[in-house]
Image 1 (tube, rainbow, N blue to C red):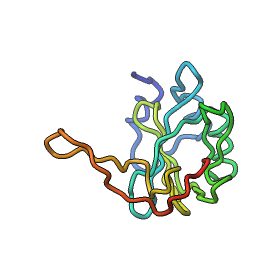
Image 2 (cartoon, helix red, strand yellow):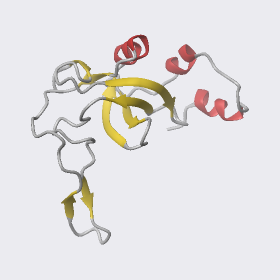
Image 3 (cartoon, rainbow, N blue to C red):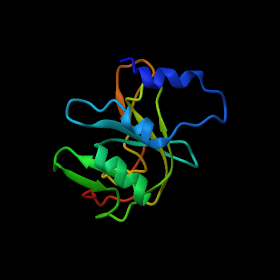
Length: 146
């Protein structure tokens, strides 16, 4: 999907800036008012998880520095680590070229995945694309609520 506002940003030169509220105003939230968010470890650059934010969750994340998502199953805010203690602190946020996905570099404390693993992408497809195997053992077998 083309987003004229984000296309116009391609003409910026390094060190130019745009006001954050302008960028947020032009994000492409879906018909449910949600936008996909990728959480990435700021140190290792490992992709930790994918979740969703609505505008209010995005605002809370920016205001508090704590990753706040929108739980589609609970239809409520989900502050990462509020229940499990496995928190994510926002380091920096990036918007993709279309304004339809957010990348958040975070400081992860504990497991990112509710399964107790360091990330949610632990099922690896083999090089021949015939089988899938468990790639990462859980750090902690206790299943987290968040």
